Length: 172
Image (cartoon, rainbow, N blue to C red):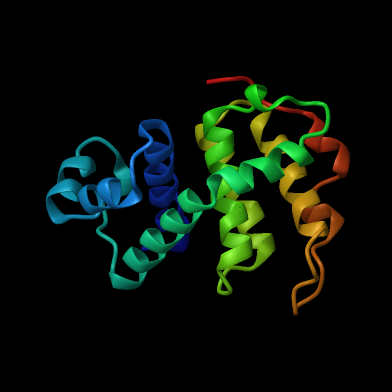
């Protein structure tokens, strides 16, 4: 399974946890079990290939930390969303941003640029038309506030211009 596919599964799990306000273990134990995966594979092609152990570890780890830190990360998202109130940010946008920010902060094996690009791709697939540019702008601002990565700072073109963060999204 590719990391992109594992990330997409993680997003679905995180989104469900956030909507249902339930602990990640409840969602993860079902979605990643053989029975859960087989059932879900009839509904969504993302579940057509069962994850190997390293994918399961990634999914469980990133969902747990993103859920645990979601309020703290949403506070940061709100600070970075100049001109937008928190209630204008869709739940899917919040989940995508939370997942990516958790990945950037707590996963050493994911380059920032990759996390941002993947977040934008997830937004194109699952969110509103304006969400990709909003997400790109917020994550660009976010990483510019962090110390540079060892392989160099993120470029302006990879993170998008700062003005894109003012695009916003509609409520879901």
